[in-house]
Length: 218
Image 1 (spheres, rainbow, N blue to C red):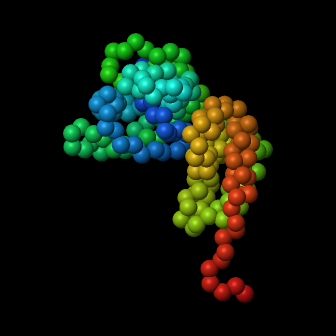
Image 2: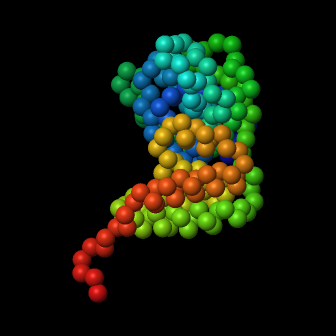
Image 3: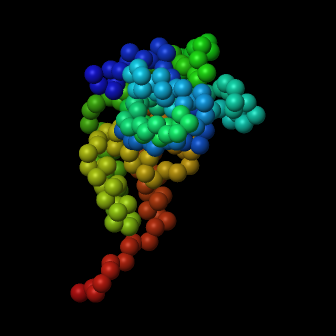
């Protein structure tokens, strides 16, 4: 069963981890250290059942009620626990693999310490987009200005993705601001997302100087 099929089965009661400082994109991975008791239980239950969960942002002003159930932003990223390590005291290290965007329809009444939602899944359309090649060319130019190890990772990610997935993996690498990442997560039109990420890459290029070659130049 694919990750998307597992999420389709779970979408009526999808476990969700609100994490204000992080936005996960589909087609990317995120390492997490799980230490809060309610989210330790979430991970234990997910590992026992289907290994699926979603990550969500909280609406502004959540700080005073974080321990409760402050409002979540409607667009989330749903994915699977690709790897886990249980630690002393019931804590976990996990890696979450983002699979698809999802929109919260409603939050379910509290029956568990963690939060659950009824969601609709929003996978990208699979077709060719003219903006894709423009973004790929910009990524190649950006890689030429980055340290080799960073450039290699970015080029490998860009080489094995296309369409909306390409936009997501590049955004995950070049966009640091959490609010901007959430905006890109909310962009469902793939062409628009590709153009938006291209603009982000162009801004980074404008700030970077070309890397000087090492050694003698002929």
